[in-house]
Image (cartoon, rainbow, N blue to C red; front, side, top):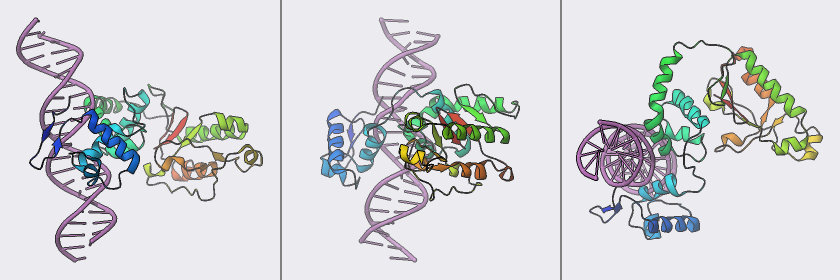
Length: 253
DNA sequence: AAATCCCTCAACCGCCGGTTT
DNA sequence: GAAACCGGCGGTTGAGGGATT
């Protein structure tokens, strides 16, 4: 599966990593971090180049990496993002916690490329329209009325919810305005991330959507419903944004 | 059972952009 | 401003293993 070990002219080892090398790398990074990849192999006692160490760590050894099959939802996100951004694997990987750009790239070439082509063919005959069901738990809301409706529903759920509901559900609103550069940025400075029951009862939290940590910084910002109405659902903006519900989250594209 | 084909995925390579000297 | 350094990215490679002939 991997290249066999070899050494280049400078005595730098290449090819498959041994378990011993992995352990050296892991224990070094756990103790010292990786402030300088080029220096790291020397300090860690590895006969590797810094790039190789970095790659091994990022793609294979670092914690919280997901292994195994991709879910239908993950596939759908990859297809959707690839449709929008092309081969920006690192960008796509940011939205799929636990998956690396390399994993996604490989998966794309081995599985999804063909599917994407098929989908392009079939989409030409697909009728553009209102809420269109997707084949794998991912629902797209494409009309303005549907977007307004789904945001209304979300608001109602939150406004009628007890603090316990807020604490125990995984209801998530994930939004990232960078997907739609034409839309205004969301001002989050006036919002709050506090979510204690006291603050909820006092009304301080009435309009705040709770965020689940999804990936990177973008997904942890709080969000206010007025912003959603004014920025995403205002007919003057054309509501030109793709909104998907997915695994308890709303994804804005 | 052996040979060949095809797929997967870890790893390499070259390039680029940002930062430091 | 130029050169060197560094991290990160995307394209590509190639060994291993399963499927097929």
